[in-house]
Image (cartoon, rainbow, N blue to C red):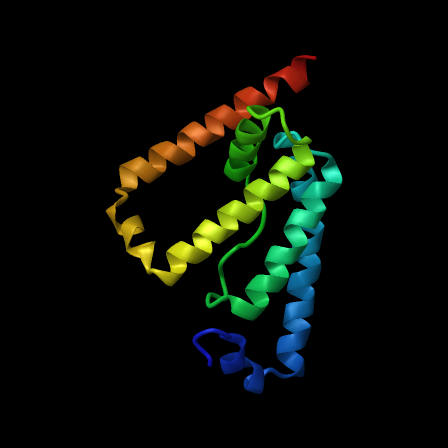
Length: 151
């Protein structure tokens, strides 16, 4: 059962000291996450409040199903850019509804890939490829904000 619900392994040892540390960490993450999630929603071309909604559920779900104590979970700039690119191409649905369907489909594919153990494919991505992807993402994000800086 602990394979599917990892919190069952650490919950019996959870105490007041750990709770205090977790509470302080939660306050710090909240202070950082609110403006960050608002900005990522705007980067995705969505209303700012959708960023808040998109950042709450992943944190709760990862507390129950997550296995790493140091992994950061929530909206990120690259996903926001890819969401903006995907929802801007379609004209059938409103942007918020298109983003919700995109999130649902992406989550479904990730769940399916986790069930069939496709995580090993990440081992074939070399460091230069990942580094180039991160660098290019940063450049694209910076260039996409120039229109807001210059009007």
